[in-house]
Length: 497
Picture 1 (cartoon, rainbow, N blue to C red):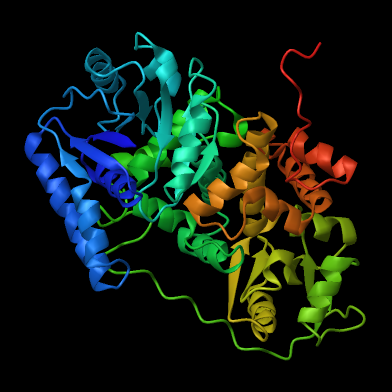
Picture 2 (picture 1 turned 180 degrees about the vertical axis):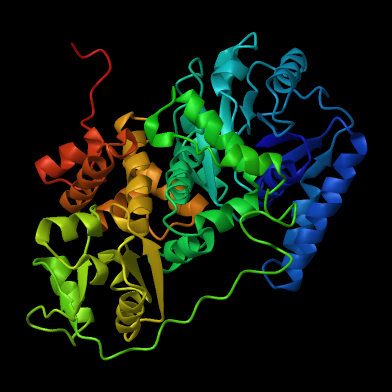
């Protein structure tokens, strides 16, 4: 296939390298002619590095270089060009002008693809004389390593085009997922579950960003905590994406932005690119606080059921009956410690919550209330630390931090499936490939258990009254039917009466 890549910045270079390595002839063009040579030199350096590391031979690298064809003009004639992939500035007018010019010089059989990450594909296509020839091909940076591409048909895209592009992507070594032309497409939309809930926890003063990041990494198994991630990508970028998706979905409560972001952006607290964000990148991340030493304080675990049993198994040195001097630990699932204290008549100064999600991990999470006695907190933390590497102390909140993050991740993914914006399989594959989660969000919910996830979301909704925690129909329906979250919707045929 002969592919023309227009725009030779970071994304354009990556797409060109990916396509040429897969055996396609790649024309490179840019409004700035010298940028084309710079891009070819850059790709050449990466190929040399691959040869030095033994990932390809000199002959293979030379063949890839030979397939990179520089153009003097983005609108050069090309009757044999099969596909144009645009990777220019993220601006609707700029992209529309480019495709209008290409329509005048390339044959009607040439497929047009836009690498937009935020603009509606349908709106770009609508500016063409033939909108049916355009679709979205959304790559992720760095393209050669991020082996996932979103194929996004617009409202007028020819029906066969998504399959053609998906097959091209797969044959060229990447995974293709076909997604609806909606705000954020699939990956950026699904990723809002983590960051919006992280901000909600910060708004509620549950813990500082560094503590929430540690919980996200150690308890949930994420590669990066949400605030680390936002410092890496830049808060200005993250805030713009959050606002765009929230607005695009008509102010969905599940995607609600935080009031904290505008002032932080205005102050230049953007992350690594400004030196300061949620972390001071000149000073480095603060060290983890050492867990308190174990004490001989008597422990009693309140409650019955699997969570209480798991907590007893994790802390074998507990009392069979509660004594006045005992520290009381309560496993909470979607609820608060204070509610347990009030409902069961537990001692307010000496009763704390433990997140059951943290029990199998290296980090235990202990929830405290305004009534907590500091000495009793230290005793409880010391007891939890005996069989763990670290203990994070957080303020009491429905579900605790890890549960709220997980519930939001699963909930946003379920709402994507519920709207038929992508299949459950594509949702899980795209999110694990692009965001590095330990499991796809729907499969993650299945690991926890569909009924248990429904219980969590119902409890969060009841405890807070916030519609952002309202369980999705996708979750409730599958819990009622005894089906996993990864079960697709029933396939209705178009035109069925």
